[in-house]
Image 1 (cartoon, helix red, strand yellow):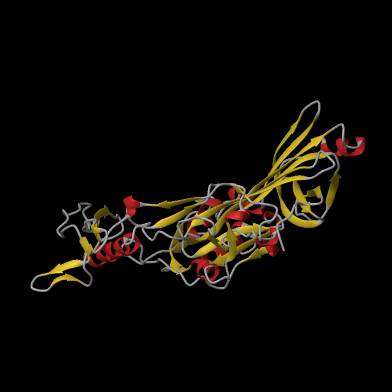
Image 2 (tube, one colour):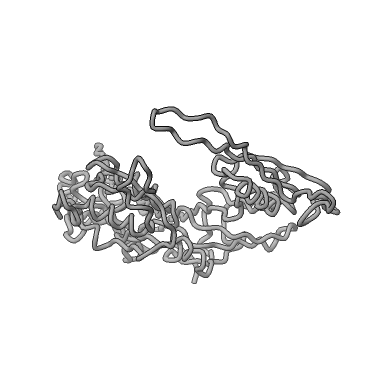
Length: 404
């Protein structure tokens, strides 16, 4: 199976909720839609009045933001749906812009008090950390008015809850606190919670949450340079090279006292070195002087490392990643796929792993990515369909996100 080019597109306007058709749209000239990892995607249609029937034009004049939803079908297959957030009319046509169902999160707030934080002297009633999947499920349900103890109004749900796919657990515990009703925007809250081991995206109307540990085990799609119309670049990042890593951590601070004062920090700033020197024995566990590259020492800092052990662990990652110097494939953002690409539109799912192998390049390299975003545009104004499918890939290679 190859990507190909769509044979047909159809746009439909539904009433809020997605189960009642308001009007089928004829006369659409341009259609765009997408999928995005960990955020809402967007879609739009442009309608030429000269190509639309008078009945459709009349009904489009009565389409309203948020009260109507845009639905897109590719080859008669339902691929995208979400609330219309912007409408424009000119003498010659209409333009409608929409966000997928995750866009509703930014128009809801937390409606319950939440206290999934560590118990401290200042917060003795804290619930303690919990699995991120449990937290995100509870917070979404509460914001949609179906699990509230103070606010219980299922009219707050725009038919989203039946289309939520949330696992029982992510395997990663995290914290979340919002002690007052309305304290946090739901979209911002969800995006912060999923940082702890969850991937989020939409397919059609479904809002999907998957443990990132699970997505990494999926069999990757396999692409080569021939599957891209864009030119891919192989880069050896010499500035990331390191045969020895040094990470300077953050100095631990003392707790604020009952009188409001904070004693000065008494512990030294943590420093981690890898490999390290042992007097009388030399370098351990490996020699930082490479037979080919020689000695390349690289230092960095970290705000999260507050002990020597944590700083040394990051230094070890730095040296492991940098020796030999990393060789990366640079895939441009929004790189257009060839119609002959060895992938189908159904397989282009955010968070899905992709292996890119460059077979014709003189530098041998294969690299693993994840799909970060998919953007599809189609010109349907002529007899011959003109469709562009673009992808943005995220590099899984560097482990140094905690250093700067």
